[in-house]
Length: 628
Image (cartoon, rainbow, N blue to C red; front, side, top):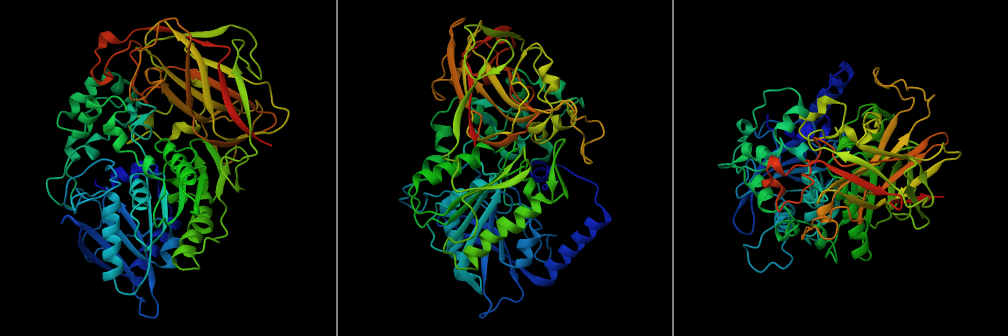
């Protein structure tokens, strides 16, 4: 059970294992036992707290054959815990495993077999004055210091990696300043819970409603057994949409979590106050001392942590001089580069073969070999930005990101239903938003009870566009390829009869009516006319001017609501169309806005939810960057 949640979060669920893949797994397991020796330690931190650590050392390590250390720190678990029990893999990449490193895995404080108290997104302490001033950077420093001094036959170089929450520990660890830390790869890193994972621009991700027992309950003592299995909400229906409707207002969901400290933190801090601000790693990514080489990794279709990798890369790049800092973005969902599936799919869209293997072998392995075993001088033969064009379905290399040659263009939302290059009139489009009849975010009911939402990021949007409470704007059929590469900014001018509203904006690639299915297209899917979501994001109007000081809307008053949709690299091919969809509800991905301003949405009553008529004016624009 304890591995279930990490697998659900990172890997996409269980699949049937073919005879070939079973054989490969058996080979991996045999390789681990034949080539590595396992050691277990409780490593003391500066404040006396001991962190449980597994260390796997190559059997051929010697004074004449030293190995670098590759470390992962995690809040999930580092099972198996028995001294003689070995995992099937020591790293998700068999290319890394067979290259041979000293692999280290550590339970962070307050989790599993480690001592201490668990804190979500441990606040970083920039100026540590006493031994009790501890954070993830200090724990990383203390761990590295112990490892290089106590693990025989290491070469004095350390690399760190981690996906998702471990990605946060990786970027936090990059701030530790230890001279032995030479390479850091935060992958799908969490950076700020008000913009990643549990919120998007302050809107609560109710699709995470089943995760709170994992993150909001302290373990009673160091343990190798899960302590939260019996704390998940009891569900009497298999219909996720209906179940989440019963959890609205949010106080209904909260009734499941009366003793959950993480839920209570949400209730106590509905705005971006000091509590959330202290837990953001972003403000600390400047003037990094003894900075390791950094390779940020993410997926264009990461429903959990897209803000994190993009924002971390840009802030490190902006606020540090002479630092090796690169970014890799593939056609992946959350952590999907960690598993090779052969024919790479996201949702119903095929992106090519062996895409994860290409990353693992040609990018990641090259990065760690250069800085941990090679010259380490930054001449790694890797580009500044290694990005996958999700329209052309091929990797591209860039010297900087966003590309300086990109041209900013505005697409205006005309009430004719067209995306235009200029404002056509003073008109507007309008729709009625009914909180009791929210727009679903997916047609795939299977993912509604998943640990976190995943597949919707590239799903067909025809089901939404056919609703009267979803506005649709599209170009004419393209006569040439158009590549959007860089940032997207929604610049809406809106009005509503209520005093609050959400705005969910989607960038969509509309396929031609004669588009042929690929050999890997699911049988129930037709790509002819497919409306593939390329990018989306939500904005809660109350936060339009400040995330820390929310303001109500003035009914029927035209108001600016501006927000980013995150970056994109996607070529809309000749014969396709570019579409923008605008809606207010997207359920049960995000919680339903009452559309009446309330001080704390976690304490709203059912009577606070009202219908409202929303207007989107023709002067609204979607600003994109076009690569020529």
